[in-house]
Length: 353
Image 1 (cartoon, helix red, strand yellow):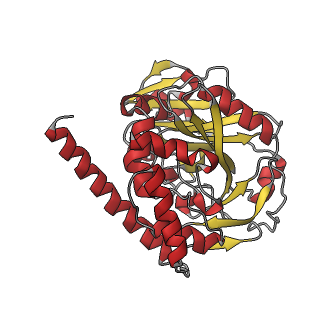
Image 2 (cartoon, rainbow, N blue to C red):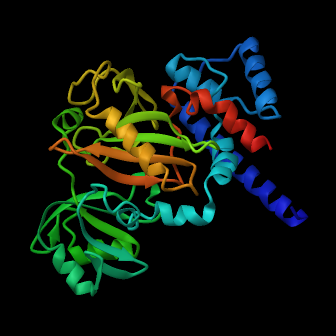
């Protein structure tokens, strides 16, 4: 490594550290934080010195211990995750391809996915993999009973996702025309039919597509293992389920049952039931075992991204549906417990080399 490369990497690490330390402090400001005891702090630093080779900032450990009453040395500080773990395990050149939502049906042509209506790729429009002009693309979206539009690259943690309908070219999104809606997205976006979800998933919040985020790890021995799974759901009347947009997320155990509490990020919230009144604890996620098996199978086809967050769902006919692939921002949902669990040491040892 040259001196210039060293200082570039150092600058990026420090920048990301400042950014994510600021984020975790903002999240902590919305809840009542507990203080770690000296014994707990010493235990964490001993663990990280042994497996990471240096001491760490303890803000993440303090925050997650405060919100879930679960002390663990294995929480991963977000600044380490985004500045060191993701760049090491996920090839930056291939992440662009893997994370482009316009490419997922090409990567997995045999996997059921939301039906595409139009794609915009680098400013060019496509319908059923054939190029079309802009006017044709607008016409195809003139009358849609239930559709979703989103950026295909860098979707800003779901902030660009809009669920809408259209009649004679006028959409339910702020009464804009289809043309105006397209204009607001610029280029690199897609329009899909909304998925009609499984009755049980819809019972948690009928206004949003409620998805299962499963994070998988492609190990050195060619084994793909699930690291964690959460069920994400929107709030009453809201059409997206992203935690960054105020949605709830709840941990799923190996048997496919929800944990006792679901959480929100900003502001912090802790809930026993969904807004529709469904109790989380013990709620069974439909086809969870099959969902895990499917993402493990698919991940073996994407070796350049060794950490992937898969957004999956189950439709009204009990079919597994791939919604999105997330190799860039997989999300670290640690309010439900340490993200990497039994594989924490393996991952820390890898970035220590």
